[in-house]
Image (cartoon, rainbow, N blue to C red):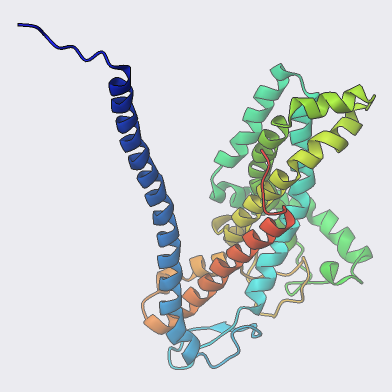
Length: 325
């Protein structure tokens, strides 16, 4: 009896192709499903916030967007607005971004363009450790150590630049600690590792031929950075900054510990006290027992949810719709 052996290359190749096609379809299905799960989760979160917020918004006896009052003690007479919450949240986050962006870029450029490898690796590790510090530790350090240390700086700014609204006396004056100014510095330290790590990765991926072309033209180190590294990494740096801004907008415990509460409306000053969206919700979480008062805080959460989408949309526009790296 003779044994028939399949030696046809096309048969073997066809079998591998069919197997590869099945694997390709399975992998494509898994990746598509993963993406849909993320989109569905975001949509369901948004739907939950809207459903729970609408009844409270309809029962609100004050203007939601312009009122500085947030009183939910009487479910039959809800009076709440987000004006002050928006001001404190935006001011503290933008101040953090203004401080952290240039420092993060400087560190990233130093690590990728100037620092020797034996120094860059441990330095990168130390920067990354900042991201592992718990928020409550930042909050305790901020209110007990940083706030008293920067009080002279705050006093100087208020004395000589008080004519400008950002440095005018705040709604907890004459207290200069526990303000948006202090919180902004804390947030800057917290988001610095995010901006630095992402920006460093983008700058490190600058095409070598871009750098060599600039050097061939006789460019100095700074001119190489200006003509090759920064243009290539611009969109990545913006994306990293927006990631940091998202962290700052949603930070809760550190801000709750650092910024003092205030019964007066915000003046739009960095020396104001008050609550951010996240810290207000956290401060009242233990009292979420009635649907309408709880819905008032969920309404604030909905605004924060929308705000993060707006920030990301602005980032895409500024970055030109793409991210290098």
